[in-house]
Amino acid sequence: MIIAPSLLAADISRLAVEVKRANRSGADWLHLDVMDGHFVPNLSFGPAVVRALRPLSKLFFDVHLMCSKPEILLEPFALAGADQITVHVELGGRVTPLLWKIRSLGCKVGLAINPPTATSHAEPFLRQIDLLLVMTVNPGFGGQPFIHEALTKIQQVRAWRDQKRLSYRIEVDGGINFETAADCAHAGADTFVSGTSLFGGRNLAAAVRRMRQAVTGVPARPPARRQHAVTA
Picture 1: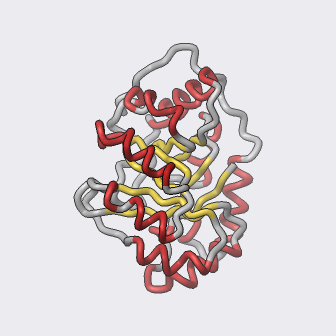
Picture 2: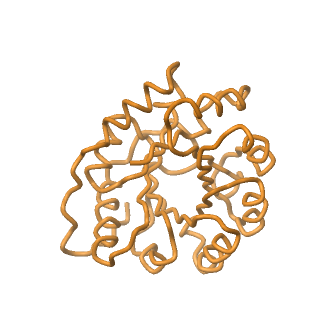
């Protein structure tokens, strides 16, 4: 089970300190949400910030591009120190070349799917990816409530992974607290991005331990017998 604090919920005025706090927390990854103000109605940070933070941490940098034109950002983020780059299935016909480009840059390959998008849109790419990110809120802002209908999607993509004998990780992001993380683990998730519930407290290490306890040992539901395309 991978625990990945989301830098979006950190104290932006003290990013270097916050990254060092994450280093000491026992977390596995650091999740970095990159927003362009177009694909989602918000802005965050660019490759220069990742480049500045990279020497401060040995954590795995999980970069999630919520961007309309990720093709112009892949190489800058790879050079800045991203270990994994995730793009969105909603980009349609551009997805395949984007995935190949990420792989060619030496990064792990992630694919994200938004709540309104049917899981069937992600199925053609499952053999090309290392991680499938099931968004459990509509992306763009932190602190949103968890969308419980996403649990069915998690079950579906876990069933596909088992049926096709693949090994991609199943990541969840959005409204992930200690209770919803356990629900997602029960549905089949194994990688948990959380902002407010982790960075929001004074003791990040204690919060990471609590979340790991919440998801470790939670039995996943049996894979679904039928494949359903879920739209929400």
